[in-house]
Amino acid sequence: MPQIHIIKRLLLLVVAAYLTQLVFAAEDSRPNVLFIAVDDLNHWVTPLGRNKQARTPNIDRLAKMGVSFSNSHCAVPACEPSRCALMSGRRPWTSGCYKNGHEWTEYQQAGEGLSAAFLRAGYHVAGAGKIYHSMEYHESEWTEYMSTEGLSNNGPGVSKDDGYHTDKTHPDLKDEDLVDWHSADYCIERIQAESDKPFFVACGLYKPHLPFVVPRKYYDAFPLDEIELPPHLQNDLDDIPPAGLKMANPGADHAKFLESGRWKAAIQSYLASCAYTDMNIGRLLDALEASPNKDNTIIVLWGDHGWSFGEKQHWRKFALWEETTRMPFIWVAPGIAKPGTESKRPVDLMSVYPTLCALTGIERPDHVEGHDITDLLRNPKAYWPHPAITTHGRGNHAIRTESHRYIRYADGSEELYDEAKDPYEWTNLASNPEYADLKAGLSKWLPVEEHAQAKIR
Ligand SMILES: [Ca+2]
Ligand SMILES: [Ca+2]
Image (cartoon, rainbow, N blue to C red):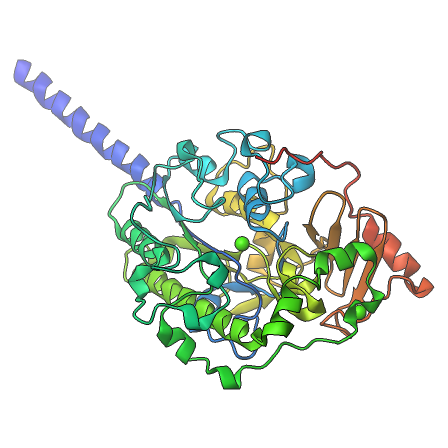
């Protein structure tokens, strides 16, 4: 009977549709990823708390949801190469991307980036703001990316040279006048969207990068007359070799701040900018908590490097000391990372790519360097033999263990600091023969071969 055939066929279709749904359901169970990149966020902010004046309650809130790494360092202390290393999975000595302005096409092939791995795996991959350098984002590696047309990093009428100055902030500047507000909005929509695919949403926040321009209310929360200078030693540079002095560059920013008397104003502006960023992070967390995805979303928050405010007469990033390499690094991984824990193990940002692959079951591409830190998410005190390694320019490296920082410059000169006794790295122990064996052990982590620098574009 033809009707029986039709009924059989219909039944088969129903079964097939059910099985397809099961397959989709299985795909759906892969965790989402909320990837929060913050530009120039140093270790002043809580919970790291290097500067007790900082107030970032939403970063604290995030830390209470997972594991905060308190000995975490960038692979490179500059925007572009730090992000290149994290996103490509290649150390600068492998890729040749050591500094800002190095030619992209020389060190990263299309398809190698972290977001591309998620795209290939069937994720919905969306990005906003600064993930790579400035607004470059490698279009083929995303499902969609926010346009910044008509949006401003800094608000109206602010030139970059005004960056340090609180009194140049437009008096009526509002939260939504800055691009970060809109990047958060864009990501919030995607976090909350109904989808049959898991998401990888990357939110790249520009602040607290210079210029330190945010709405007035954030400055008002940090009165200038209450601002304190960071601990610093007058003659700290006396035991630093010439290669380190060149990085400190005391005749540049520091001389200007001593002359202008605006050292505290710069600190006030930075604390205000961090508070603005914290507000946007809070908005992302609120959105995730209100969404059905809250229990199935991995969150990773990272700053791209540290920032120095006159310690060692040095300002900004671009150096190999604790102030310029250490930054917030927080992981939330439901069912894996124990909420509210801290890991003191030394880790660096090369860990992001392999760890996200491990946590989501995505195959780790062969080219990806760095250590998967899943074991530390499960047990923050797990055995961890690796140091954090930071490179600034070809041949200059810092090896950070739990107890020491060893710096080796390209000309062979060295610095060595005992972090427990000397957290601000005031006493360079490198010339003391007592530490010869320690230095020899640490120098084993230095690369044997180093890729030539990529061309400057
Ligand atoms: Ca940066
Ligand atoms: Ca010193």
